[in-house]
Amino acid sequence: MQELIILLVFAAALFYMGRRAYQSFSKKQAGCGKGCGCAVEKKHSVLTSER
Image (cartoon, helix red, strand yellow):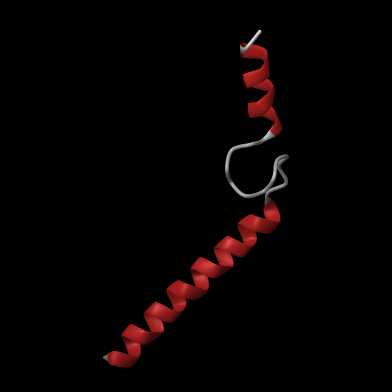
């Protein structure tokens, strides 16, 4: 029973790390890449709303 639990936790960790790696390589967006929301589109919309 303990081996099954360890296997499930290990499989979940592998799935999580694989998904994170896939997302980091598949997204090609402008900005700094830190996920802070500083993409070009947002800066552009802020600049146009200040006028």
